[in-house]
Image (cartoon, rainbow, N blue to C red; front, side):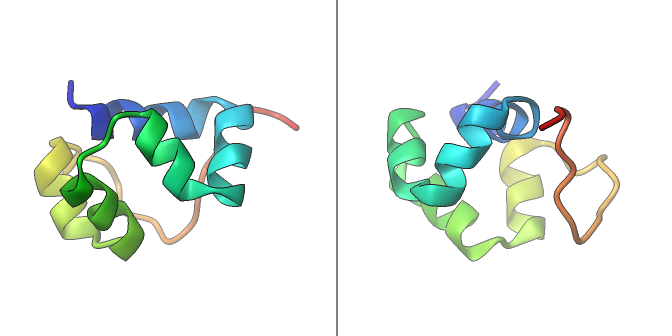
Length: 71
């Protein structure tokens, strides 16, 4: 599993990480070890390219964030 895929899954499952990403996405992406290209994909939010890079194309496309944790 790529570092990008791991980060995307963690962002949906870990509330502390998601909050940190909202405050400082650059720091979280660097700490996750993403390449410059992966960081740019996340910044742009190009769903098609993210799907190609991560292999997550079978996921249902939606226009909102679903978090797997309660606040």
